[in-house]
Image (cartoon, rainbow, N blue to C red; front, side, top):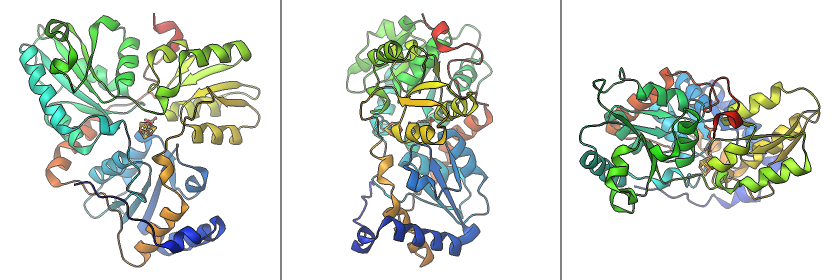
Length: 391
Ligand code: 13P
Ligand code: SF4
């Protein structure tokens, strides 16, 4: 059942930022070690200022899993991240999302009924094949549970290649013989799946896109059988805004500038970029770069602006002037954070994200498999820059 965000009590809308900051600080101090605040890199600065830990999806899921002593995790991110935190923490740790409207349009592009339907059709079309479902972290707990129950794993943009390599080895969780073809069903971001598979050397002809609204996902059954990757027809509305011509424009205007993009960008953009990697990878590359470095970055604008402020010795710009803002992440703001914390102080847990026991059991299997697989942060590979790997 979907629960909607109730309007905040009017007092929170009337407070100035300075007043909100003071009240949030007081609430944090009073809650002490009972509270841990996690903040995704795409959050606005005002919120990041209060985070005990910041990171990308992979880092934050690890941090959440470590919080055994806290009573509350306030997750400044989006719904699927808070769900994952609930799954990864012991029962007594309660996870709170300050605004229930902070969802993810990509995660909403795959639901369980569509997944069950897809699975049944794939078994029909490919009866002699071993199909391993892999879901991007950006998916509901129900999809993660499906994946866990069917021998697959979760991945993030930090470890996608490693997870796919794990899934494609015959020693994976499902029994197979050398002659059994392994096929990956990848949810819900077709771009992360395609970019990673291409970097691993798979040609585009070996990938099909699964449109959940069409029979056989809109594919010819023989093509479906021949494919190594079935990519769910989903995308990130933020990263899909970047286009190959944006890279061309940067090359023309700033020939010295390096283009670095997130693997949720479409393949044509990734192909033209100098580097591709998860949010944490992008952060690390820029932090390690010498003064005078120039970057055009293809990811969420709040992170890019923060990196530009933190590194005035470098030139850091957004890859294009499109509105690359994650509007749902942006819903987490000082009034909602203050409201959530002050309720905790009064003994009221608002906006708790709780995954039911059966879903949790299998989703945890899929998440634990992911956490056991080391990530490189660069789904394109350990040694090669992207431009040289993709034909
Ligand atoms: P990462 O945090 O894995 O880089 O993913 C980016 C994203 O879109 C989060 O929603
Ligand atoms: Fe979802 Fe994209 Fe926003 Fe991440 S950036 S939460 S994938 S819409």
